[in-house]
Length: 350
Ligand code: SF4
Image 1 (cartoon, rainbow, N blue to C red):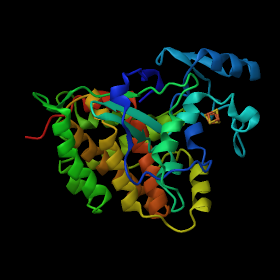
Image 2: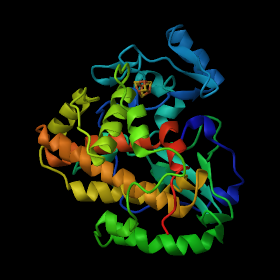
Image 3: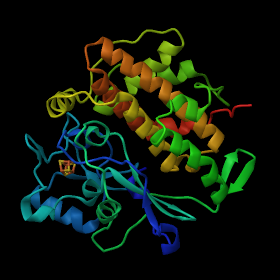
């Protein structure tokens, strides 16, 4: 969810604020969120002034986001990413560091029963490592407070949600459906596929999966996002009997750091359950369709995640690291405009 979408919401939708159980994260400086991960913006006016005072060339204007953003280096990395991490983190107590960077990987969904603190999984510091501490509610809530002292939601859920395209139910009723799914994932260690309980790759209202894969398989990539998109498209192709070309692996250097940081293998299945739980908890699906479509969408990305992880294992990666790398790709592409447009075209299960 782009930061430019943040909205001010009445307090009753943000409070009480809750964080899902077992969210474990600490920034270890793996560096992915600073390299072609997401638009670094929208920058506020005072941030633009401060950043341009450091370097007049680092800020650009994004027509897509309709906002000022940090201009990336040609290799897709942030101009402030140094050998030991963010060069803006320490000086002046981080005053110059843009707010979206402080906020990531946290997000906030306003619902009729309060605010849900969410986390993005396109970040290996969030997804992998046995020494990631559990995030207390107070700490996460503090990360979401902006310079003007206000807290804004990334996403808002209405009083009713679409359980199917032609059926709306009160949000409280939806919560009763969702609660056992979260419990199964987080407390009972259930297989994510059994919890989602839908078939991947449903029929499309328009177009074909082959055409989608073809559009994603970028021949001339010029960014890490393009590389990720290509892997995503290749995985769709494999499902249709195509081949998985071995193209550039985005974020190789970051995953090398992960291997050093995580000497003892993490639990790959727990990582996947954690991601599926956040896909539900964020409620981002309410922006593009029904819960039925969302389940088919999650089943599809889950399939792609496992296929990509399998491929990375075959190329020599440790299973948990391969899973984190596959998670990066499916979470990044899955939250992009590419995938949102496709999700709206998914048929619902009968
Ligand atoms: S400003 Fe710092 S934290 Fe933000 S993207 Fe650049 S290097 Fe990363």
